[in-house]
Length: 61
Image (cartoon, rainbow, N blue to C red):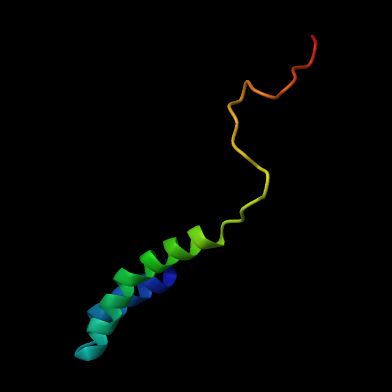
């Protein structure tokens, strides 16, 4: 988010082609961050999702 904020501030301060590069960077960076976060999430083999009431034992009270 700091880089995106710097891109927005830089786009206001600069002029010419650099302004448009910074604007595009500010809009593209969140998309890239979300895609990278989704790809990097670990997948554990054999960790199937099951309803909470199946396959679990309760402690006796």
